[in-house]
Amino acid sequence: MLSRAWSKVGSVGFFPLVLIVLVGMNLVILCLQIVLGDFPISVNDAFKAVAGIGNERYDLVVNRFRFPRALVGFLVGAGLALSGVILQGITRNPLASPGVIGLNSGAALLTVSAIILVPAFPVALLPFAAFLGAFLAAALSYMLAWRRGLSAVRLVLVGVSISASAGAFVTFLLTFSDIYDAKRAVVWMTGSIYGRSWEHFWPLLPWLLVLFPLLMLLGKQLDVIQLGDELAKGLGSRLERSRGILLLISVSLAGASVAMAGTIGFVGLMAPHISRYLVGAASRRLMPTAALIGGMIVMLADLLGRTLLRPMEIPCGILIAMIGAPYMIYLLYKKRNM
Image (cartoon, rainbow, N blue to C red; front, side, top):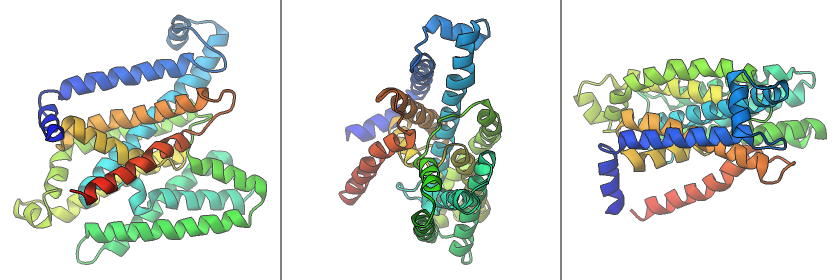
């Protein structure tokens, strides 16, 4: 009762306050990302470096390594969270996430294949391999799930099958590969924003700048889809076209994010659920809230991964999975007892 009451109140009156608090929390974590590390920097020196008026040593640490890395983490988290919002909406499945239609597995399969089968494959091209793998997996899921229309249930089942098949091929490749190549592949598969710089930030930024406003415009269509196929068609919605467009946006956001950071899981599952609790289920409130929460999750996980066991670094994908897996078990238990 208390949860439902809060969701109802938060979905209306508290939405601006929730956004302000989340923006503030993201800024605090961003600041901590910049000042903390093996080479601590004061807040004052960090601000001077970001503004371009700091000394050369601080400028190198802040603007070459820490600042762009944190921004890439935020964009990756926001992209995965928005992708999760879409998938949970069009499948009407609260457990859906970018991995549900095989995106992560498809990206992992093509990337691991490139690393192991082509030892001289340029590292700079690995994101493109991941992006292509995610799109191919999504296209295959869509085609196999289509039967006189797209069934949300079939899409989920096909996605799970594709994920399992791709995972089996990845395991096969790792088993018979050189130990050095296998280590490189496993590091990418855990999900990390280690070494990310402005060269990764600028290619990723346009995806969010273009697709997020488009997604906000399609928010009402996503709300209608969640009412059910028959009711949506009765309200005049062009269901298949809307679902196809939304799925394409979801794949684009997840594919771009996975391409830059590897297979970080559970962000697309957790962020929409937390957002739904805070602001309700209306898509136009849910989307910006989920984007801020997703970005915050990845930035915070990366900060903890850099600082907990310094100088050793834990990939942020591992820390997120340590929280996300129990959270998914909790959701399954909660759904069973509803």
